[in-house]
Structure formats: structure tokens, C-alpha cells
Image (tube, rainbow, N blue to C red; front, side, top):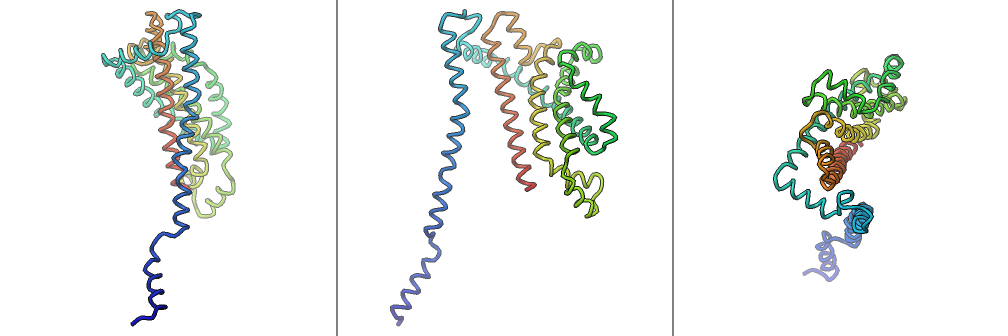
Length: 284
């Protein structure tokens, strides 16, 4: 027979696995996260909604004709028209393809040259002034030369996007590596790391946020250069839609192309931002 005291002890031990007040408090502390996310989404959408309302009000005021400023519903109707016949997806697909290929080539070259320039003062003194001068050349100034050298196919279009992506990546990486933490470098050398091993294991992780900033700037610049690229005897792409709609007086399609360029550019930036978060979390 167990005593009352023993029974009480056994009963208390049977309930040790139940969540206590601390666990419940932890659950309650995690609850506001979705609410914070929804509030941030609402804040991000506030300005576009205001601009949309201003656009509708301006289009309805009579100050502009429909040819000058079509209302938002007309632009939405043009989107449905092009999506219905399938041409919209062709234009989007070819533009995205040009940006991805051009960005990969330009960012890759910018990364390699930026790393060499950032690590070597001698190479920096020899290369950096010339690259800085080329960076000041406007995007449209490259078009005649690229057509002369590469013709009117995909080559000059992708090359122009690559040029736009190259400079932000090169500039950011070369500056970041040139000003990398000297103490970390010394620690790496003390452990016998040299050359590529020192670069990959110590220097690049230490400047990873700057590298991703350069990549995101390069991707945004690639989308900017895309419009100039698609002026080169193009018959497809969102840049072609811009010029073609201007020539045919379809302002609704022109505005639609501008909004699609903005949306696709933002979507690419969001994807690269998610990659950045995962990589930085891995290196912490």
C-alpha cells in the first residue's frame, strides 16, 4: 500500500511531460509573426494602391485623352488580349531569357575581374581607371558598335545586357575585397591558407553581403539595359512591345509593358534576395 505522500509524488511525476506555463508563453510569443508579415505586405502595397487611384482619377478627369492616358482597366484589358492569343508569354519568355543569359555572363566576368582587381594593388592600378572610364559610356552608345560587330541577332542583345550587369558586380566586389578585414586575412594566413583557398574560405564569406548587393544591382541594371538591347532590330520581347505600341498608338500596351518590366525586375530581385538569405544563414 502506498502512502498518500507516495501517491502524490507519483502523480506529480506522471505529469512532468506536460507543457508548462513557459512553453505556452513561448508559443504565444511566436504567434505575432504572421501578423507582422501581413502588416509589412500591406505597407508595401500601400503606395501602389495610391498610385493606381491617382492614375484612375487622372484618366477620368478629362485632362488627358484615352490615347494619352488610358485607365487601368484598359491596360488590364490589353493584358488579357495579349495573354489570350499567347503572344504575351512569348515576349516575356524571350526577355527573361535574354536577361538571365546576359546577367550570368556579365556577373560572372565582373566577379572574376573584380576579385583579381580587389586582391592585387598592381592589377588595380593598371585596370581600374580604364574600367571606370568605360562605365561612364551610356547604354545606347554601345548599340551601333555591337550591331557592327555582332549583327542583329541575339548576340548584341545579350552582350548589351551583360555589359549592364558587369559594372555593378565588378565595382562592388573589387571595392569589398580591397577593403576586406585585414585581421581575418592574417588569421587565415596564420592557418596556412593561401591563394584561392584563402579567398574562398575567408575573404569571400566575410564580404558576402557586399557581393550580393553587387549581384542585385547588376540584375537590376541588366533589366534596364534590356530595353536598349531590344531596340536592336528586335521582333520579340517587352522592349519590342514598348516601341511597337508607340508606333501603333497603343498606349495601353505601352503602359502594360512598363508595368511588366517593373514586376519582373522586382520578382527577380526577390528571388535573388531569398538566395542571399539562405547563403548568409549558412555562413553564420
